[in-house]
Length: 110
Image (cartoon, rainbow, N blue to C red):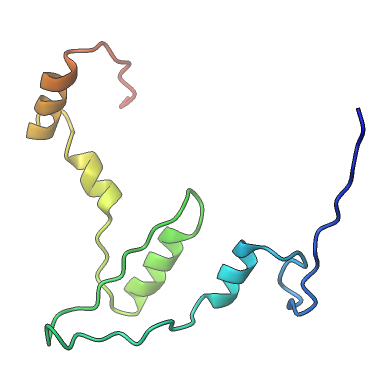
């Protein structure tokens, strides 16, 4: 087994609080708070500006939502809505049973 070490390319312009390596994550972090495109509602005056916030687990979505709420934004958590859609007794739950059949599951609610 041969071991080859490949050094990371260092970003000579990184700030003290940033990682030194060049990565797309570091580049995205550097763009946080940067307005990439001026929001316009020229087609539908008076409509709200909608932001779709996505990201992996523990990427900061909830923190960003709390910050936006603090600034007066309304937040719709689609994960919560999705989970409510198939709770026992709902139409979504009945449709899942129709499609997949009755299955025995552990009750993790208690």
